[in-house]
Length: 78
Image 1: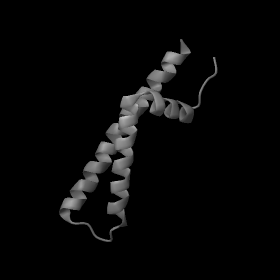
Image 2 (image 1 turned 180 degrees about the horizontal axis):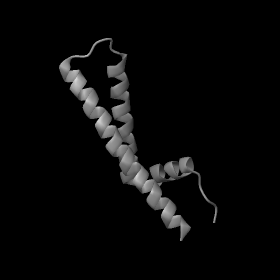
Image 3 (image 1 turned 90 degrees about the vertical axis):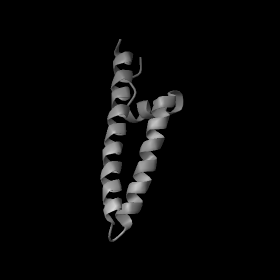
């Protein structure tokens, strides 16, 4: 059996796993908004809070995606 790289696993999961696709798309949306906020020279208190929440949500999504990647790797080792 050919061992896939992490990037290949991500691509495969993105194509074949709806939950992974939704997580990755949501993560990308958060990243786009984060970049918008970071381009501003000054943030309001509300924007500061949003920035903090976006970073937290991105980490949660990333953790879920990496758990799925680890599970995929384990399932391929059997």
